Image (tube, rainbow, N blue to C red; front, side):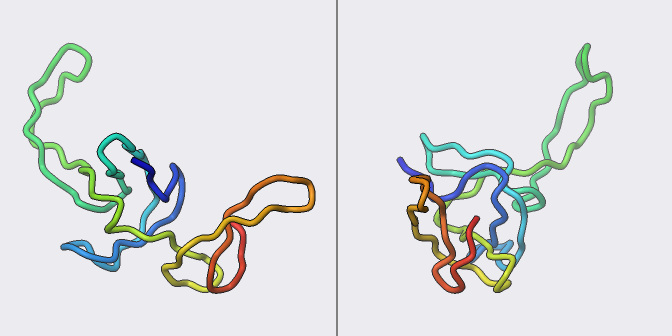
Length: 104
């Protein structure tokens, strides 16, 4: 399954309980088509203390959301946008904002 976002991209959530939040993609899971975004879909996990991490208790962490619920966020036009691919003069392929033409 192909995912349209990459690690370290800035994305905005377009549906669900965290609609409108922006964050950085921490991890992409292409096998299931899900992404983990910083500050989005926070869940509480009950964690036992172990030898490496002696502190136990309730830990808040980000859970994965479906990649179809996020869109790439363009810093120039300050909106969610689709991307297109453009081939530069030197032969390299770059991602470009459909609305303003800014490269990512």
